[in-house]
Length: 116
Image (cartoon, rainbow, N blue to C red):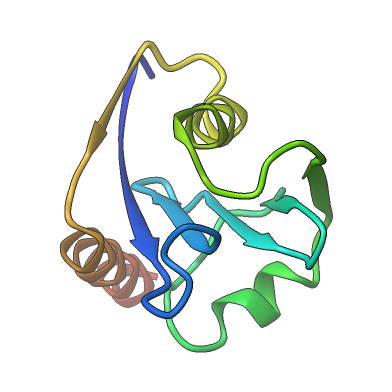
């Protein structure tokens, strides 16, 4: 796949240090500040449905952590690294609305489940 849509959800009470990146294929990465520096958590599994328990389900699989020891705030490098990790063979990334992408993803997941 040469292109991929993604969305970023910024945590309102920590807009410079907490975010979730969600890819149209279900890939998820979170970034937060651990009190010393930023950490990016990369989930190996893809989400099957994006809801309140998505992180519980993703946490059952492997997770990788990237410490950003010299970073105190999210910047474009942190976002680019996350996108490249989620889709290393993609040439183009297009940012879309987070809630719209989640709604579309969940609609498609429900449709797949109904087809089984």
